[in-house]
Length: 176
Image (cartoon, rainbow, N blue to C red; front, side, top):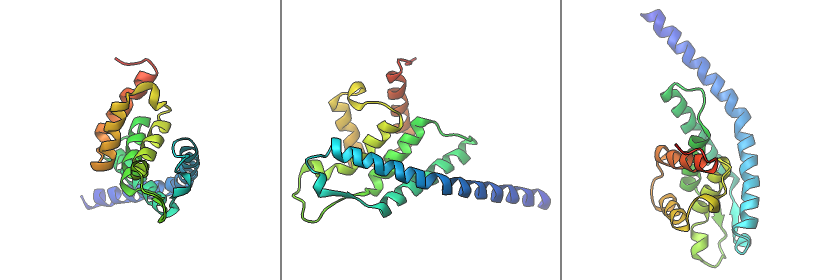
């Protein structure tokens, strides 16, 4: 029994080492990608407010690390090597809306739009991850509901991944 316990511990340590190696490769790439998405987001969605917001690299990195923590926990729990795009999108939305990496500059004039900038960015990134144009597949009311939930509620990635999966399938005309 003790030998089995040692083997399990060794396998667990090897898996942890492999995960650490993958993260060293993936986190900097994700950071670059999110910075690029922020530039597009600011230019397209917040061009009138662009001078009032900035992206905190430190907070963005915390969101990315938390995202990967959740993804690897999910993979371990489900005994899966992969998380599908909808799940990845949902976990990223969760952590961007929770950590709030976009900071409003101190002298910015308060607007409702600025108040929701992190929720808006989280959804922007989430939809980019599943490669779906928001306005083509959801109504303004549904978008407002998603914004409300990412701003005022703890986002449940399991439920959100189901929503993202349905939107992705709908965008491909593959609904059951």
